[in-house]
Length: 603
Image 1: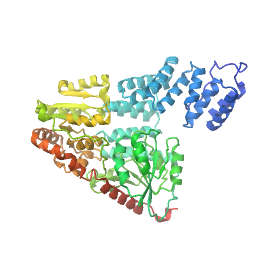
Image 2: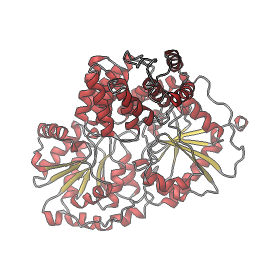
Image 3: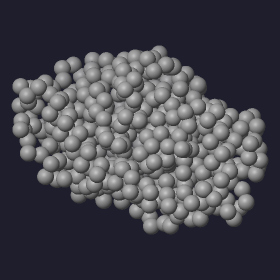
Image 4: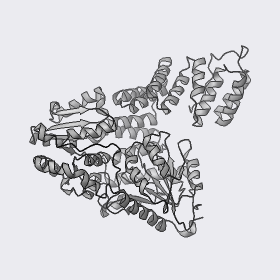
């Protein structure tokens, strides 16, 4: 709760039993309004020992704990019990539940807040946030719009934009983010959201996207003031201390690409420190955590304190794995807490942060002529910028389904965000040339009946018969991998192709047809297929993409042979060869360190 806590007119009379003196409660409110949260916590706990039913004290304690990013749930539950008609409290309780991942409970709390005060903007906004997290995107959009009707807000416009993007309504999403910036141009998180959208679409020119990124970099630098210019890392290390900043050290595409690399790095050459920026942990977190010498969560720290923590750890090379994706902490890098800083893995464009020294790429992803569109210096890894970890599920490669079905089944596992009109138009031409072919599409958004119904209309508008398209919602990762047994060929999206999905499909014996564009992101599919020796599956124009889909799908014998040997083929390629990639990665880390910072600046 970042607002002033209001005095509730129904506060129990202090003359009644178990209520503290009004003067002490008012003093507590004054401390809270002065943002002296630690003092509020201490004084509230003292008062509650004597007055355990002091409702407003419980409320203030909960608010102070939330402001310090501490566990506020018990305090807020007590406050709600004593003040059941306080909309603000129900909203705060919802925030605590949401942070714990109890989304349906949080939704009920926010709805209670809205019921008690229908004009409470935060309640509408937070309902939208939870609905968005649950994949109920149409409902999320409706609640964001309701909140904006009550009070225009930059953050509400920004989150509305994110939900619209997930629905594939890119034009509306960009407009929403631009409206957010008009309301508050200082909000760097909104600029970051806008950059994430721009990088995944063909909106604007490369030069315009670069300038927008530089604008973000200037904005965060202004907030920092003076970054570090001297560091505490060892000047001539025997091994490099490398920090990884990410909110995705878990079951997430970033985690899937990290796991095998971490297991194969030489601890005599590299010491790892994890800086997770999110409190969520899972089975993958547990598997990778032992590979780190230190595990230092940053989610409870502001950017300045997080930067000081990293600086104090004496890190030589600091890696950002998020870029402008959700929950990133790029502003930390503007403090320059490490002498060498690099962007890698989770984002496919320039960060725009002047203090970010390098971006790790491969030559297919960033050809020489594209380097001008990065504020970072491109550091090339040999073979590939990515190394995928084989799925933990031991699943066999199924036989080519077309041999039994008598028709080709194209597959897509991408979210709607990636499917614009150009993609649907190309797929319509492919299906038109192959009248017996079908399309199997599975993603989280299609699990929402409202979204699926609207998407049927989009298919019809592009001349695709919905009867030829099987639409499915999200399932477990194991079930998703098994679903490749029903697919003959993956049709990649463009200009935002698959990455994790392409690697997983290759592992399950299913080739992906990709269209190489002119950005790092748009060339991701080409990088993956090139390094696995599948150059035949890379198109350079939409016409070639359509032609290749028809031709490659027409030779079932060749498809069946490719499928039978594809897993072994990619397993032996650099894309899955973790020991080989680890040596290349270590060499890159040492190379950046040796080239990155003048020796006289290291202290």
